[in-house]
Each structure stands twice: as C-alpha cells, then as structure tokens.
Length: 264
Ligand code: PLP
Image (tube, rainbow, N blue to C red; front, side, top):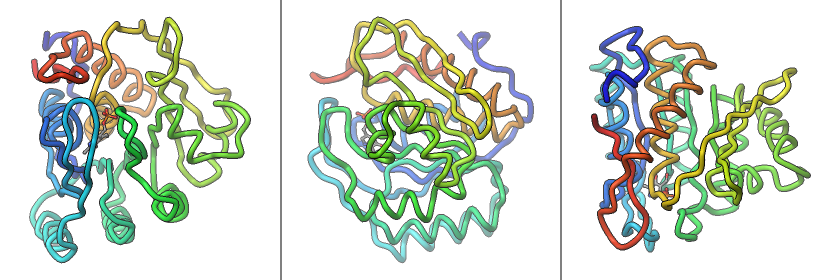
C-alpha cells in the first residue's frame, strides 16, 4: 500500500494543525495526525474545539480555554520548526487573530479547510465566524478546500461553482479547491481555481458509502505534501489520490458514516 503514496521529497517535516477533536477519530485532529504520519510527516497539534459527536452527526462544539490555546502555540513555536499550517474547525472567532499572528511569523504554506457544517447536517459556524474567516483568514491562505455547499455559503452571491471559486480568490486565497463529494452524480468532481487561469477539474469515481472525515483527510494531505516541498499542482493531485485510496479502505466503526482508512 505504501508504494501508492506520493514520494517524500523532504523528510522530517512538521505540520502545525489547528483542528477540533472528534471523539470518533474519523475527522478533526485524529484525521490530521494519521494522514500526516501516513505521508511521512509529523503533526503538531493545537486543539481548537472539543465536540460531542458520533459517526452520524455533531451535537455539541465547545472552545478550549483561550489562555491554554495561546500557551500551546507559544510552546510549539519556541521549540519546533514548522513547514506548513493546516486549519480546520475553529472553536471561536478569537482564535483567528492568534492563528494569523502565527502565519505572519512562520511564512509557510497554509491550508484552510473551512468546516462550516457537519456531514450529518449540524451547522458548525455562525455569521460572525463566516465573516471573520473571510476578512481575516482567507487573505493568508495558500489553499482553501471547501466542499460545494461550503463554497456557496462563503460566496452566497455566486451563480455557480466557478463563480464561487472566483469570489473566494477575491477574498485573498491564492488557490481554491472546491470538492464535490457532497453533490449528487455518478462521479465526484473537484475543481481547482486560481487567478487568471481556467479552473481545472479532477474527476473521481463515486464510492458507494457515505464518509466522515474525508475533507480533513484531504486538507491535511495537501498540507504535508506542501510542507515536503511539492508544488501546489502535485500536492493537490497526490492528496486527492491519497484521500481516494483511504476512502476505498474506509471502515465502518459505528452506525453512521464510514471513516477513511488512512494508515498503511
Ligand atoms: N468534527 C470535526 C472536529 C471536524 O473537523 C469535522 C470536519 O472537518 C467534522 C466534525 C465533520 O466532518 P464530516 O463532515 O466529514 O462528517
């Protein structure tokens, strides 16, 4: 199985992950740790939110103590070299300026997975959080990876998917990868949007199950590949291929959706 994984260009990379804790282990910080380890990197982890959830849906989200969050960041920055940043579910808008400070200090690739709604339907964001993501965070992001519904929430005035991509580029994200796992159809169509270039589409066979944690897996795979020195094109392609493999190996651990098989 390992042979199918992308080649590690630069070993010993650390990826700083700002993510929520999902007790099922399907999404959130555990998805980041497993993905980054499977692809040859190391995850440094700062928890942004605790959740109550099962493999079907999220019922509660709580932010951790803010001073603890700040102290964890400081301790990591003082000690470890960091080659990329991955941001997932956020617990409060106060966390965003702290994360921006880290981005400005480190100047490494930043991947944002804007987790706005759980696959099971629970909204995980507010109007205030949406505005803060767009105004404060998107300008610092190398690639943002919304699913199609999240892209529409972030760009409510856009007429179609390509217009959503253009709108998110206007907020300042340098690359936008809109995923289509949440849309109907015989194939999953993802699209890569960049300024002054035609969008590029990636088409993947649709697998029969429903998944929990696919978006986190994809975003952390992109982050570790960028950390290792891959180009954006290679990172997006190989991260999708890796994620597709993990979905083919998905495990049904509960009564809801299956979780990706990320470890070799
Ligand atoms: N919980 C956490 C902590 C997450 O980060 C995410 C998604 O990124 C979810 C739940 C929802 O995952 P899904 O939509 O795949 O069920």
